[in-house]
View 1 (spheres, protein in one colour):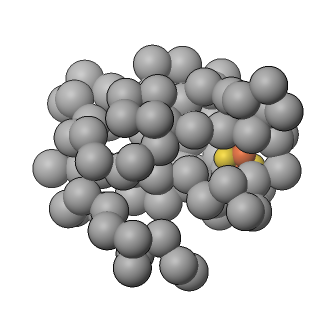
View 2 (cartoon, rainbow, N blue to C red):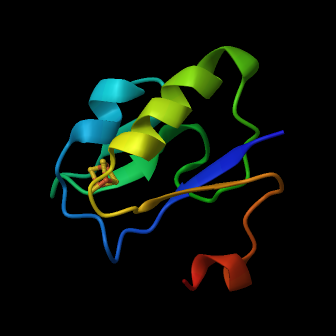
Length: 80
Ligand code: F3S
C-alpha cells in the first residue's frame, strides 16, 4: 500500500509532478501541488496502476516535497 502527500510549505510550484502523474497531482490557482485523490489529506491508497507515475513524480520533484508512505499520513507525519 502506498499513500502520498505534498508538503505545500516547500513546494515551489514547479509543475513537474502533475506532468509525471496527472491522475495523482493537480495544482491550486497559485500552482502549488496537491494530491487529487484525497485533497492532499494523504489518506487515499494510490491505485496499483498509478504507482509508476507516483515514483516518477517523487523522483522528479526538485524540492522533495512529495512524500510517500506505506500507511496513511497522520498530522504528525506532515511535519518534516
Ligand atoms: Fe511542487 Fe515538487 Fe510538484 S515542487 S509542483 S511538488 S514537483
